[in-house]
Image (cartoon, rainbow, N blue to C red):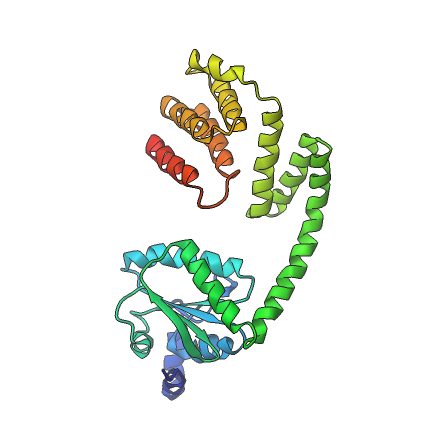
Length: 300
């Protein structure tokens, strides 16, 4: 596939037409995010071909009427942001840029093509699970790391940032080791006040809160809860006791039942406690996936 054809076409277009092509639908980083760029014919050479000489560029061919695109594109954007600059996501609206779709020979959308060194290296069509896409991207990075200098440079920069970030967790971790759960909780909350989307701090905060409760969990709370189905505090205490005993599904089911029976502030409190419990488990845990579906049914 000769991607230089797009460059020749873009250069042959009148200047005014090129400017029109780089309006609101394309041309530049999406939402100010350098990991994601909206691409048209006019910026294809710079944003896809030229960039791919440094890091892989993953092209997402999409359209506003495409339902699978609405599932896939947010996953790709999330992974691009997590990539720390090791690769770039180029989003292309096929309705506005039909010649690009023709160039790639896309038979259906969504179609995703990885470009490295100016040429396509991998591709897939249709919406895929997040973990499968993550593995696909990692395999491309592994294959191209020695060829594209930008991958290692971005990884090294990310590593330095991670080391700096880790220093903020030191006080919390030391407090946790001393059993000072309130101090550790405050430290993680300060991180989240500065960075509300810090997943490491969110997970650590959930772990600290549960560890503090689990230390004082009373196994007798489970029996008391059977006679007090409408007492939210008793039900929460029983769920903590069950979780401390590794009775994960019992704890989840108990709180989902409370959500069904309550409303207003009580329901919100139990829902938040349940979501925090979910955060104690790794991504992909089937018990959490099942409980999330049951919680959604209970809420809606």
